[in-house]
Image 1 (cartoon, rainbow, N blue to C red):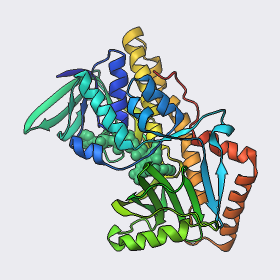
Image 2 (cartoon, helix red, strand yellow):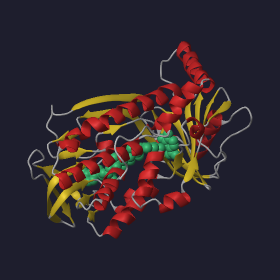
Image 3 (tube, rainbow, N blue to C red):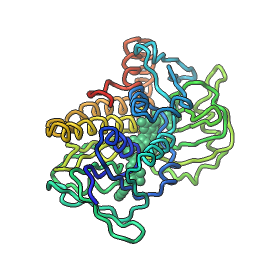
Image 4 (cartoon, rainbow, N blue to C red):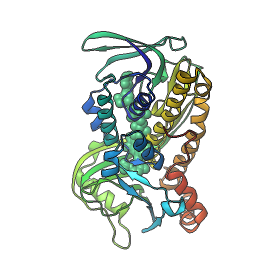
Length: 395
Ligand code: FAD
Ligand code: DHB
């Protein structure tokens, strides 16, 4: 087999890249080690930046997102028992975020991929990359017990944080910047109508909590737990007790409760690999960088990366120029580091750290009190939350 671009991973990064390349007439093969159902059912992100929504619409894959996505023009920051509204749209000249599950995004993109007739292999075993610093890099894998090889012009490593692309780069050729946080998030999906139309980020003396949703009938909630917390330690009743203690405000607002449909614990990490390229292999999305989820940036960063990468491939094939490919990593990393900064700030401001002092607690409360009292501070949060400008045109 041959492909202009061999894409490893059918998460948001790989699928968006495949479709952007299709629209530009560039052929690709997508190789994914999990099954189609597994990839679609994986419950993860929910918040799409304005730019990610615009991208989906301009790519022609935004119809269901426009129908079913929940546009939010504001959010709440809650502390000391009070919710404070931040008007994202008013502070950013009309921008908003849209709540639409990552699994819905992935489902729409898989449907679009299949409709193009271009290849996507699920359940590919033993995926590996070869000759990545040569003009003809290769992807090898096994499908239904048979060995396959794809000779490519380029490889896009879109295989997430635990993938094989980044570890295939020789040691010393990329630099890693990393921070682990001393907590994780316990997250649930619940069969309960959302009791607020907008997200509520809560700072409580027992730790962070977040109210979100997926649809008019489904609530999505998280709270901070120790990093290696065993979900088995948490009965459904205990989860609801803790959610309600942290989230209930003095005016009586609290999430509606209901049957818990799914639960799990996610670790928190900041991670950047620089540069996002080795030879003819380009890393995009979580394969290159991870942010703690507090800023809701991970999926959106993946979308921003592949927008740049698709344009760079187009420039190569249409104008025989490697200029944008050579700039790919620098262009992405400028935005990635700003998202890292924002995600780190949201995380540090809203979580309790083990061993922190009374001074730290008071300082954090003052940080939040300053935030909700200052238009400048709220504008800074709002423009980062709805998404910083993309550095290239959309499609
Ligand atoms: P992935 O989604 O990880 O996709 C990589 C794909 O590669 C996967 O399908 C994987 O199966 C496949 N793969 C892995 N190894 C191989 C291999 N060896 N061979 C072939 N295929 C392979 N982000 C936001 O923007 N907003 C949010 O609100 C948000 N909330 C989150 C909440 C939680 C609980 C979590 C866990 C994450 C959240 N994120 C959020 C982050 C977001 O989910 C990720 O940043 C996003 O999935 C990155 O997309 P990706 O395509 O780069 O990687
Ligand atoms: C959701 C996840 C996040 O990480 C976040 O910051 C906001 C919302 C969600 O899953 O809905």
